[in-house]
Image 1 (cartoon, rainbow, N blue to C red):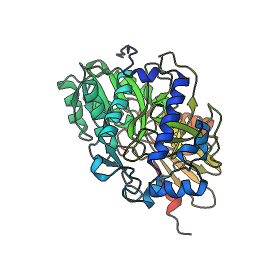
Image 2 (cartoon, rainbow, N blue to C red; image 1 turned 60 degrees about the horizontal axis):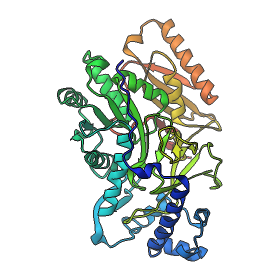
Image 3 (cartoon, rainbow, N blue to C red; image 1 turned 30 degrees about the horizontal axis):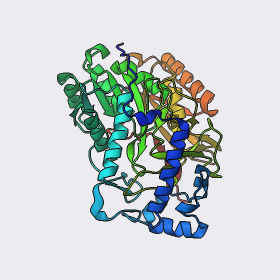
Length: 441
């Protein structure tokens, strides 16, 4: 397996700012942000009810006096009721997919765009990108922030872009090989699709020119990283962002791959209990909440992401001084409650990838034929491990069952299916089918 050592390089001196100086900058920018959103109808009403104003903010602890903002709030003021600048100052509009209704839009001024590209450049450089590289972006280009967001970050660094967009996996592989592409950007599940296509063509990881990959836009596990690195022969880095906050660039990994550095000079992060909304202790899992202290067009105060993760404020050996966040381990609205137990799909993925012989392609189906929930986990067996021998398949099924039980405490039905029989996704993978919600009470 080919692996490449990544040199630690820091793009922006702000990434290494002393903590005390960083906190002073955050306070100054928070007060400015509160002042700038004071005429946004949602915040004007919220500030009036609590008596808060920019002048009343004395320390970062006063952040807790400010209101939370949710996606439902953005929907209530659809399409651009949260704008804090004149429309004439806007240069770009992006938005969410709108899979649960109309999209939520986010707007950018020219200054926002400059900051966004710089934030993407920070984590791309931290993860090995250099001006001499060819970069293939296999995210969709459109309202989704992933494609254009990473595109402008790569341009900022000065590398060459292959804007392949999503889909047509054989063509993706052809471009990677023919153009000698060193860096791949897409979702982690799509990286595995590309690896699968390479394997189907008889290619080994050593024959694939890729060296690094930057993956995001969906939760993934450490075991999945290992699988991607082995099958593509690359070093795989995780990054995080969400369209309502800015898009990719909120945080990203350094060479040590021990959590994603949050760009705290632009975002104040909190980690709260999603039920009580009180802060959790550092290191405990909670919902991430971001305040965008430098956004001009559409700043958000205490935006509840619904993403569950942990924060780590211990110093990182890379030299960056910012707090790191763990990979997203679930979402408050993706969390499955099965027979009274909270389960995240990522936990099941973690169990599957611990078992030799399984592929990272799976589907979770929930039903409630009687009074109890039933869960069926369908998982593809790797081609080299698929067998007509019932005893071998039963042994594999038993190993998967034990791993799922060890991690979730639940017994689930495990179905082994043939290689490449489950649906493949070009964007975010859809792992869960919850038929319990389709019942008419």
